[in-house]
Image 1: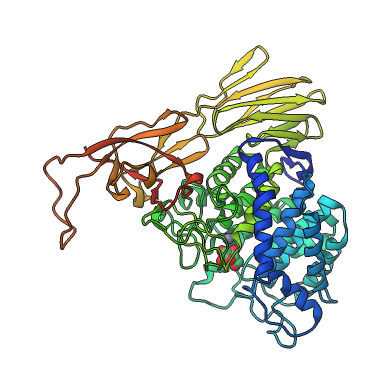
Image 2: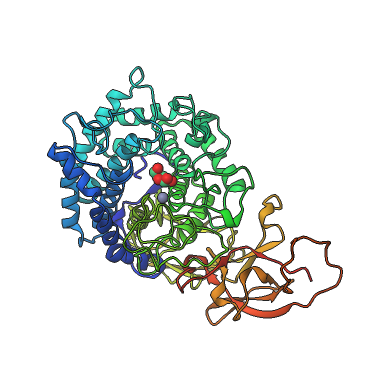
Amino acid sequence: VAFRTGTFRPLAVSDARLTEGFWGDRQDLNDTAIIPHAAEWMTKLDWVRNFEDAASGLPYSHRGREFADSEVYKIIEAISWEIARGRTDHADLLDRLISSVLAAQEPDGYLHTLFGRAWQRPRYSDFQWGHELYCFGHFLQAAVAHHRATGDERMLRGARALADHVCVMFAPGGLDRVCGHAEIELGLAELWRETGDRRYLDQASVFIERRGTGTIPLHEFGRAFWQDDLKVRDADVLRGHAVRALYLAAGAADVAAETGDDELRSALERQWRQTVARRTYLTGGMGSHHMDEAFGEDFVLPPDRSYCETCAGVASVMFSWRLLLATGEAKYADLIERTLFNVVATSPSNDGHAFFYANTLHQRVTHSLPSLNEDGVVIRGGAAGRQAWFEVSCCPPNVARTLASLGAYVVTESDHAIQIQQFVAGVFQTSSATVRISTDYPRSGTVEIEVDAVTPGTAVHIRIPAWADGARLRRTGDETAPPAGDYALVADVQDGERITLVLPMQPRLSRADDRVDAVRGSLAVERGPEVLALESVDLPEGWPLDEVALASGAAPVERDGSVWVDVVRLPQTDDADWPYARPETTAATRVPASVSLVRYHDWAERGPSTMRVWIPVSGT
Ligand code: FUB
Ligand code: ZN
């Protein structure tokens, strides 16, 4: 996102180089494992061949779902960002993918491999599920990424032709419809930024205003599923299908910021606030319905039914990012951090060859599917462990494009100031200084920020996360205790100056609002930005997870690089014909133990296990 307006300006991906540490390592994994893995699967399943067959002009059977094209576009986007950050290993693959895709584009700019040929359904005959405009949106984003990374015009030309076609077809007075899945809005706004052609931003705005006017036929999931129940500017909270809702909100945030529409922007800020306050899991995950992959009602956040699709995490980062740039408020960067560590980083396995689609906060049964379904695809992810690939495989390529472009989320700038939004080791080139961040965060809370080649009069603003009460900030001869939940201001930095931030990393207990009744009486443990979890493999031999409670009054402690808590095994009950009885009156024996917790993003890496983030507290 190269916002033209707003409070903060982002850096280009090419101006950020992650060096090492948590995110640098994951970027490398993306380059060496995740991207090749995803490209192999979409080749093996003939999702790339769809384009080649379409170009041949001969009849073919389309492979994959309606949105298979979009997965290829997301990988093109991911590889483009890899090139922008200096990695060229997949440049040949990228060229091949782009050639296949462009060969399938029709003379009038239209590009979708499932619709419009003589033997296929007609174009624009299924706005509910067809995903045509959704795929176009991903194409436009990929094309902009490719152009920014390489300067090559090929794909951008294709994007202009496609967007021109959309502007003609869907202009007011034309096809008065919206896509069942928002996404085109984001692509059009990006294309406007890249080309300066105002028609694209105007068309994005047309789609935003048209949503909520009931143009999508009624469906059993209801109008809210497609966000077609209310106009975007009239809604108070995100609802319906989570990824759809979040992409729409992110696209609307683009339009609001770039057109200076303050009413729309404040509607989105209101929706963000209420969604975060009432419909978001501790991990930052969003969506608690499995059937329709949707947001639940306020405070309906059952951990064992948490859907928290990885794509919803990616989309939430995109929405918060746009509001962060527009408003300059630190809370958006806080949620980005929480979501990156606990949703985006949770999805891929440590070897980059398997992914969570849904990210549950409570796994009740051991998932013992073959260590990945290596030869086939599973339909979605459910909660059944990480899988190599899915029939609906939106998540792995979404992780790939996010990791590849992650450098751009770390540092922003404004007039005479630089903001450190995330604590990620790397070198960042702003227009007023070179910033080097050195840290092994979140292992430790120490973050060194060194600024060189500084334009005199530049200030550095450092985000102090809302959980970081007791943070310390040092610059030469001066130590302060900046308040949590805002930016600490370091005025007038000097060339070569080193600033040290020390964040408090003691593990902490968290409770939920009582209205999240599914976890009432339970506590969770967090350390820095990471949510921790109790995983069965860490329990004493023979202890089932559902018989374990947190010892009353227990405080988590850090020992040998892990966080430990005192737990008890509840008295074992014999199976009864009826599992309900009067409350106990006598104190029963509870067996104590001390167990270590796993970082949530690392769970399910040690064989079949059960896991819970929220741990019930033992009564006595
Ligand atoms: O519809 C395309 C993608 O498939 C959605 O964003 C995901 O939720 C999955 O349903
Ligand atoms: Zn997904």
